[in-house]
Image (cartoon, rainbow, N blue to C red; front, top):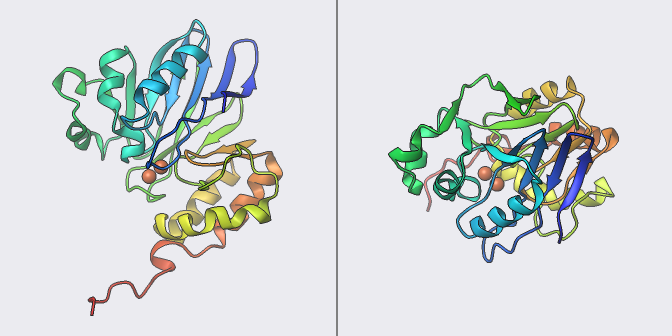
Length: 251
Ligand SMILES: [Fe+2]
Ligand SMILES: [Fe+2]
């Protein structure tokens, strides 16, 4: 699959990079935002993908320079190759302050540690070549230190593991009801609690979101599809609410 341009204006582009073969690894999406002379890469993927994604970034960023990497949370399908990214580019990376000190276990060391910048619990704004991006809290969905990135220019909300679907070969959901089985098992188990989901839904409803772009599987495009997703996830029992009796000693 080639790269997909999700939004394009004179000085701004949102690009979903080509899908890469992760072997036994879960399929993952790598997104690029380009504005002015700068590019930001979201959730770059693990070491298996690193050379392929590095090449895809070079091919898709135009004349812009990769200056920023956003890490929604600490999982290997996001962070495992961060040492390579920091060693071979001039980009800084942003990750929850809660996870920063765990990253050196993936092999990054003193040379690059200072370039992993901590995101405070309340989130923050990030400037990309003169365009403002907003890092919004999404804690417990599923990681304890978890963030989504909102781009007000394209109105795309990049949601990491929220909204993901597995086992698909298309990039956009066309029939929401038919799509539910592709999402249900994952969200039921990987999202932590109904309270966290509902607080997140209430926040997102106050935002102007055109597209939900998850880190795995197909995007939800258009206000109607976004609203359907929010209604669905709000009513789904997840995490400890879906399995309240889990804490029993095994027989
Ligand atoms: Fe994850
Ligand atoms: Fe993931």
